[in-house]
Amino acid sequence: MKFKLISAILVLFSFSASAKDTPLMIAVNVGPPWAYYDENGDATGIDVEAIRAVFTELGYTTQFAVLPYNRLIKEFNEQKFDFASPAAFASAVGTRTVRYLPYHDVAITRKADGVKLENISDLRNKRIVAYQHAQHVLGPEFEQAVSFSNYIELAEREVQVKLLAFERADIVVGESRLLHYILNEQHAELEVTTHPIFPVKHYGGIALDAAIARQFDEGVAQFIEEGKFDALLQKWDPASGQR
Image (spheres, rainbow, N blue to C red):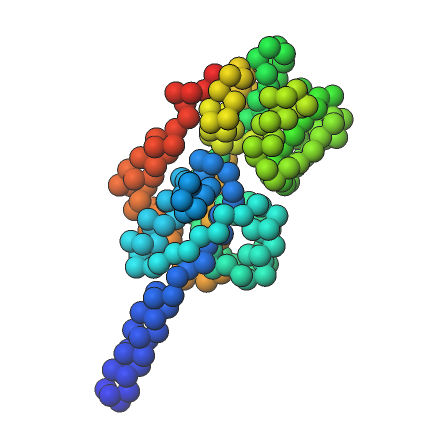
C-alpha cells in the first residue's frame, strides 16, 4: 500500500512538472499600452507583462499572441489557447479569473469642435467610431444612443484615432490609456477633449483549466499586494501627455 501511495505521488509530481515545462499559450487583445508587439517583434504591454510575471512566479513559461478581439474570442472558444485576456466576452469553456485590469472607456473629440458630452445620450447624431464589441461591453444605453448616429466598430485602434485626426469621425470611444498612447505617439499635434462619460470597469482573464485560473488568482493578488501592478500602470502612464 505504501509503495502504491509513493508511486501515485511521484506520478502526480511528474505530471505537474511536465505540464509546467510546456508553455502556456496566451492570447491578448491588441492595443498599446495594454498589449502590442515592440520593435523587436516581442509581445509587451501592461497586460502582457502582468500575466507573464504572475505565471513566471508560478513556475510556468508563456507564449503570447497579440490578436484582434474577434479572433481572440473565436480561437479561445475553439480552445486554441490556454488563457485569454481581457475576458469581456461570453464563453461556454474556461474559468474566469479575478478582475484586476482597470479599463476606463472614454469619448474623445477634437478640442476645436467644442463638443460637449455630459452623458451617454449626448452621443446621438454624431459620427462615432469604437472598438469591436463596444455595444456589448458598454450596454443598452450606449447601444441606443449610437443607433441614432453614424456608428462603426473597427479592430484597428490606430485607424480609429486617424479618423478623428482627419475629421472623418467626430468621436472616438475607447479605453483612455490606449487612446492617449496612440495620440501621443502618432498625433501629438492634435488637441483633444476627453469626456469620462463611462464608468471604470475591471476585467480579468479566462483559463481553459480551472486549476490554472485559481493559481492565477492567487498569483495576481500577490502581484498587486507587492505594488508591482501599480508600477506597471505607471510605466505606461500617458497622463503627462494627455491634452
